[in-house]
Image (tube, rainbow, N blue to C red; front, top):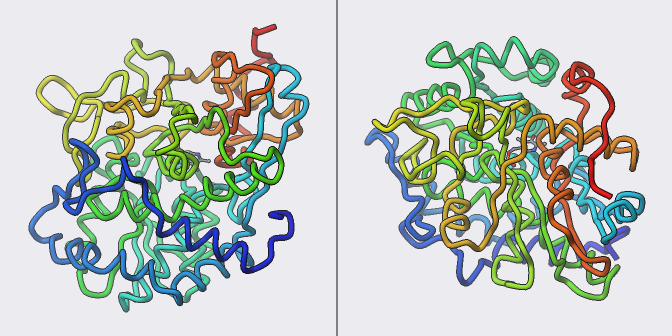
Length: 421
Ligand SMILES: *Cc1c(COP(=O)(O)O)cnc(C)c1O
């Protein structure tokens, strides 16, 4: 069905994915998932965040919103994305492996699902100006893209160091008409860009909407972004039903930076205990080396960017600088829903090193003709360790394509294959 979905089928996927929430893991009225979440914001940001909180659920439940979101996801983004049975990879690992092809979305990753949703919310709020933070530039590009589409002013905050090391994405954003503002404080990377964006929002409360790029930030962002990304798991269910005669896989694997692609792939399976949810974090050079971004392995509860979650911190509460070969996973926290999935053990979290990810990315290129983003490669690397049975179904969320990582792959040494079998 989903190869050429009728509009009514895709419309029902969109309506379901936006409005059906989990029974056990839905956000509370105060914005909490278990002990995590909330809205820890400076007083000056309160009116903006509170206004968004009071209207977002109503907006995304409106039929006119859903119709516009559906049309753009379908005709502009290119959804539904295929669920592809990776035959050679399946043979190698002796199980059934499906790749959810978010890399085939316009702009090359899952991030556009969220920016399309949020720009439609911004329009309904009457906002004329959009701001965003970006690390590798993927969220910046996805935001600049939807701003061009809607004719809105776009300002992207980016760490000075990231601007230097992500030049192609900086040029893309400029071509799309966005203004790039360097964040010069702290480590001059993603967390500093986020701080600058929040500062901008405080100074421009009337005309500006802040498009956060992952399931992080104060309530209602984690819930809103989760719903926009949850189209991924709703499609997976329909596609598996058609191809395998059942809606549930045995495993879903996804990489976690802030956690938006992972929650998108997990969302409509959260209440289905048959499905093992596996989140892969960036281990960097190794969890114990001091060069890592494995938040659940190294972090403790604390407040980061407006919500209570797990974050990497010193004993006196200073944020520890993260490290990962993939800029999209180079973040010292995780979204509060993931903190809760970790604490409640609904999802497993594992760390994957830079080297393991690099090898898994190259291996997919050779086995299936798909060069994945280095972020995604972290999820692929875990195939080595799950020991799925031949009749079991493993879905991997292929969050993005690897074009942006070409130089890192080239610099990453010799061809190598995983060690199993
Ligand atoms: C940004 C990005 C990620 C990490 O962000 P999440 O919010 O954790 O999904 C993962 N994969 C790709 C391809 C990205 O661009």
